[in-house]
Length: 240
Image 1 (cartoon, helix red, strand yellow):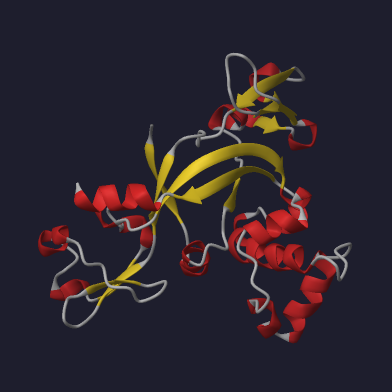
Image 2 (tube, rainbow, N blue to C red):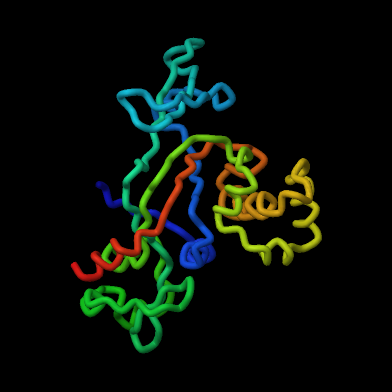
């Protein structure tokens, strides 16, 4: 059983705490072997292979060409970094107040753990926000168990799965300005009024991934990770 970190932002942490979020999608990126020396990954020709007797999870065949191989096409097998049974500890943003007390930014809950006494960030010069990437493992309050992993294109998400991503009717896209509303309407053409959760998810996806080149419109391949919060394990970790 592996223990691995996973980063979530404030809204997704609150969705996990509220038991609304039981799935997460992460972009599948081409490994260096598929991009170095002028090689080009052929994402449109990628295909999903189901689990074999030697591999208990689906994987993605990613063809690539170019570089030293010229016109030859070679398949690269991409496996998920996450496995069924893994335990993921959530890295989330924290902050230190003027009294040097540490809180989780998502819901202002205080981090009441003995290790805080010697933590370097509990010093006057660190008053303010602490990025999630710098959160130590011992400060983790949320542990998630991986129950399933699959591969799909991001636009293949179903309405039910969009709900499992943490959909809440009062979503942030109501606050978009006029230009953003037009861009959103263009991007979501084809998603009818019966798909409010998918529309919400497309907005959330773009707010995180569009600037990185993996927007909803590019329809990237993603790992779909099914999660369940393991509160019993959280208790054991706190007592350890």
